[in-house]
Length: 176
Image (cartoon, rainbow, N blue to C red):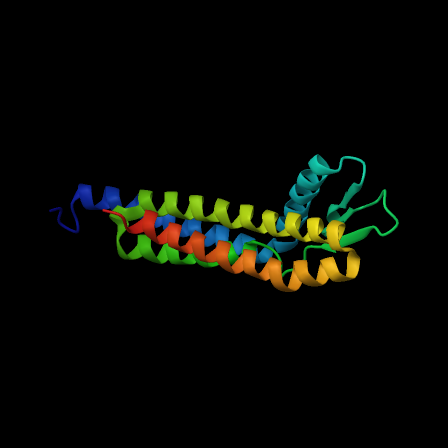
């Protein structure tokens, strides 16, 4: 057991403080640079949709919008609004991770791994949601497909995916 003033205690405190500040810094960046994050997120959605339909997709990142179905009679644009971004699902993971490291510095590596894996899971889930929405619009038409894709399926994907990411985070961060 290291004394509070010993070099060993200082070595473990400094990196954990750096980790806490870094996690909180990334959380603050997600809030203050949310528009840039959404620009990037919708660009990824455009790449994924473009892989399925290379000629029928266009991205206007500065508007956080992806247009698809451009070759059809009913093209549609999806805008990544602040409430639809994965940033605000990643944000609590970062803050909780920072609190966990602040309270128990020795778990810093596990918490960083857990935050990273869970954040990637949340981003992937959000991309699946966008792809599902676009697929339903293509399949059921603009009105019905958008309604079911945004209201029901999109919400289910987000809730279930977010819950799975939270469970994954807790499991990875607290395993012995």
